[in-house]
Length: 194
Image 1 (tube, rainbow, N blue to C red):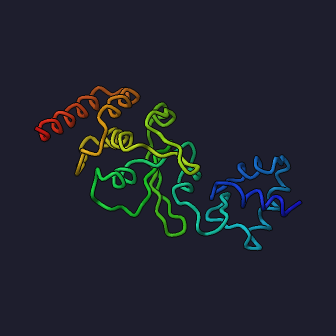
Image 2: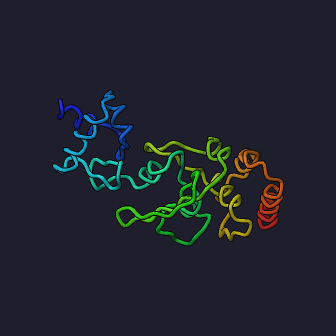
Image 3: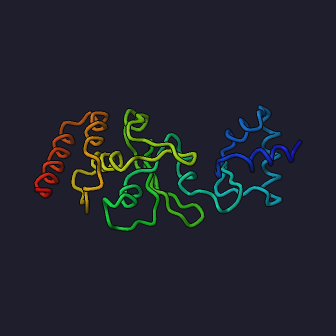
């Protein structure tokens, strides 16, 4: 029976599991039994625990997936997405995450920066993609999340953004001043294109 529990984890698409994920995967409700099995797998090296209450198949887990499992709901956003999209040129080693709290933590020498945004924004799926078992912002959503938290922010290159999508997502922030700032960025882009 124990091996089937482990094989279910190893066959799953996720690289990161919470206690609750494992209980659902095993269809098991007996908490002590689940704890004993998990602890056995960690002790014998069959599972890896990067942080208390979080488990991975091995040390090669997806760090973005871990970022969204530590605090939920959350999604990858801000500088992590903007740098990947070429909107900012500065490299950041940290993984930036939109969440219901602000916190900086380090797990396995990886820094995670959680930035608090309002629940109504956090739980709105506009501009959020689900990829590889975690949620991440589109470049347009990451741009707006960043503008929402920082009134003055230097973006190196706004040309990768789809402005139609920016204006589609913008109403979820319910912020008139932010709408004006977005409009100004858009007008500057159009001027520069002429």
